[in-house]
Amino acid sequence: MMVYEELVTRLLGPGESELSCEACFEQLDRYVDLQVAGEDADARVPGMRAHLRGCPACREDHESLRAFVEADGGEL
Image 1 (spheres, helix red, strand yellow):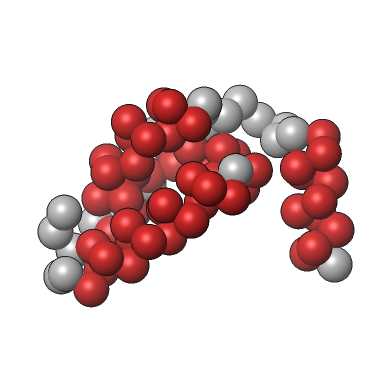
Image 2 (cartoon, rainbow, N blue to C red):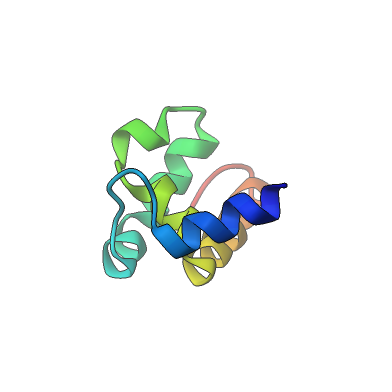
């Protein structure tokens, strides 16, 4: 069922405002730092979650950076 939800989101776009790829790239370090610190990254960087849901390239960058930061003890 999740595959259909993802497809619908990609086709229709998110139901909330989202960042552009450029803004995502500029805020990604901060977003990951906030996530790893256990803070509410979605509230502090509005639109990031929606963008990551709809953009496979940025989502991949996010996942890679977060895995790197977590493996490095939480420091960027």
